[in-house]
Length: 228
Image (cartoon, rainbow, N blue to C red; front, side, top):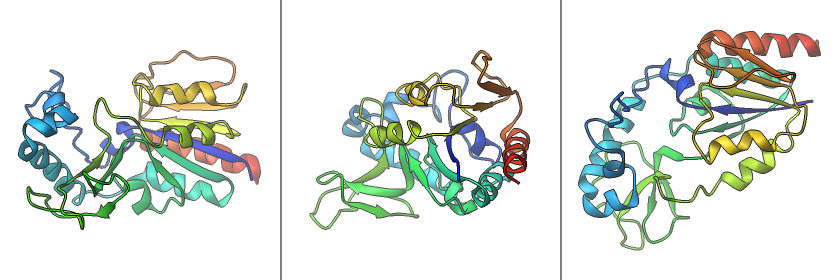
């Protein structure tokens, strides 16, 4: 089986109704990003940060995977599919994808401030006073601005082994995730699916200026028919 590495961003989940919380003015829910998505913001006002992520977690539990998520699952019948996502939702997993790497953490998990490897599943509100077994406050299991991306090296290793690369619903303009593109083997076929593609076409790059629910099924059908 050929290995298809799939890089996904906010665009694939937006069609499920996931609120990106990011306004045209650069604010998230009326807050500066650094107030709710940085170690400094957490230190200054942890209650505000927890409230922000509690709202995101609550909304996530009301939505479902869409056709793009499900199409990637069907591709596993003919290809080895590994998804590297910038999203913190669990829609790929709920759709049934076998292998998902989360670059920026997971909204339905929390971790200890004392031990970053102590990660717990969490589906309800997280509040001040929710401690881990070491009596340390729990925090969202999210990679904030200014923090290292612990899964980046693993994602690079996966991308280096790609036979085919799919990029869905992301501008690939935000680093370090954007750097993954350069690690794909030379001349690897690349499919870029986004309504507003911020990338130029080249010999091995196919651009589909479509929403994920339109473009992904098209590419999956093409790849599947190439095998049959």
